[in-house]
Length: 267
Image (cartoon, rainbow, N blue to C red; front, side, top):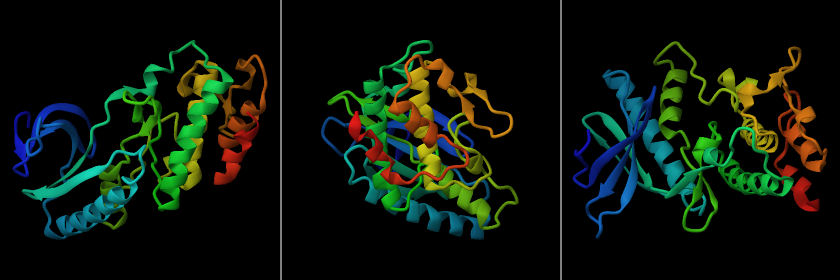
C-alpha cells in the first residue's frame, strides 16, 4: 500500500494504525502545492456479496456526510474526501499535527484541578456539538485526543466512521454477531453490550479526568464488585467539587445531562 496513489490523488506515505475494520494511513495530497499531509482511512468489507456491498456503500456514504457536517467544528478534523475503489471504501481527513493527550497523562503524575478542569471543559464542548448532531463518538480516550501544535488546543479525532459502518452492517443482519466499539477502561457497561448512548461519551471523559487527577490509567483502578463503578476517590488527597463531578460522570446508574458543564462554573 505504501507509495500507492489512490483516487489519482492521495499518495500513501506510511501506516498510522490498523484494527479489525480497516487501516489508517498518512498520505500526501498530490493535487495541492507542497503536497500537504492528510489521513486516509481504508475500509475493506468482510464480504464481496453484492447485497453486502450495496449496504456498505449506502452506510459509508451516509457516515461520510455526517463527518462532513461535523467538520465545521474547529476541534474536529475536516473530512476532505470519500470514494470507492475496487469495492473498497476510503475516507480522507485533515491531518492534525501535534501529540496525543496520552503523552501528557504520565503514570504516577497527577495534574492539578485547574488542568483537569480545562481538559474536561474542552472535551465536553466538543461532544456537546457532536451530540447535537446525533453523533456518539464511542471511543474517547487519551490516544484519540491531540494537543494541536499550532495553538495548543485539544482536537478529538477518530470518530469511528469505519467502525460504525461495519457495526451497522452487522446490525442489518449481514452477520450474526453484535460488535462493541470502544476501548476497555474507557467505555461503560452499556457500550460494552453494543448499546452506546450519549452519556457513554461523558463516562469516557470522566474516566480521563480521573486518570489525570490520580495519575493512574483506568485499568489499574479497582472496581466495586457489586456496582462495577471505579474506586478512586481515596487516591485524591484534596477533595473538591471536581471530584464530585467526576464521580457523577462515571456513575454506572446515573444518567448525566449535557448541562453538566455548568458544574464547572465555580472553578
